[in-house]
Image (cartoon, rainbow, N blue to C red; front, side, top):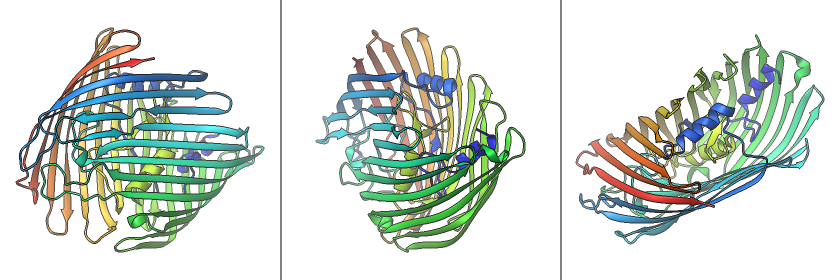
Length: 529
């Protein structure tokens, strides 16, 4: 594929083409014990996760876990301890055939709390399947995602903090994308398709945030159903250094809050010209017609444009930078992966756009792929579809996301260092009121092989979330420390132990809320079949 064509496709990912501004997912690798090295090896080997073996593989597993925390329910400034017993079944499916590329990682969790009368089933899913219905012409792309995360901001990654179900939200999202593709020799390719998507976020229990008389960010349940139709025409190699792509799309949404009867229509022309073998100039221009419900409703009809470039400094690196106007607002985007050495990578992402939390989730799910272990990646960059530190956001906002991750893989050590920043400026809400927020954090994950069957891992994260409601501002600082040991008992059995410590400190209008350091001790075992 000529560099100009490859760069052009980066503007509109081919899996689910979109003519709208995209708020990119944060970079970041998993913090699970034993999973960091596997993920980094997959990224370094292929740039998009290690592929599965040809044919179909099924890896069922069962796990049991016992946890204890001293601060599960922070009620009346008094923390309550609790044991948490969890049953953890899972199945990992990989299919690599002439007709499909499929990865399904399904890992529900049945949890019982000794304190608080809580029993719940958490759904956890990463699934993607590209099915060839008619070779070279008709395809079906299926996606699924489910996760439980803290409703409110200021928590560490899943597994580092025990959170009451009063403060947890179950997220579900699914999409089906059939499309018809026709190539015209070397002159170009036409594509006609549609996508039906559903996403929802619902609290596992109706309550206030732990330890607070009022929630920092009120988040009612929400859902979204959308249908997108599109037509695209992309030029081929016959045009040499030059490339062009036309995208016409319409998106209609129904749901709760600002997504009720929302729509987005756009027509965009993307252009590229290969200045050198490794550098391509990019430009686009088009028209947007957008409507969101809410208080106040948001409407925009007008031009969109962008200019930028795509640079391939070496075979393992790729940098795309664009700047322009999207949805009536200035918009910049950076998507970069740079190989410092054969075992060291830097990933960077920056994006601006108008979106809702569920829209952002659907766009990032549909624009990513899964490695063989079920970890999401986009263009070879490890990404996070859900980020516990920023909490749930369900209003229409101008979002600015920035993240940088550096990964290092050595003989016995695996290191991942991440810095992330998110700014949310509310535009429309389901009800009157609302908040703007700015948050940032830095995290370090270090895994070391002590012996062939024994691994140790350490994780530290520190950050802050700042809010500016109409009345007064408030800040919440968070520090998370976690130490882990995992031991491979046999080829199919592993055991692990973990200690985590979390401290949340509130200032501003939230000054006076209890600062209760939280201890979490976890022991567990897992058997694969």
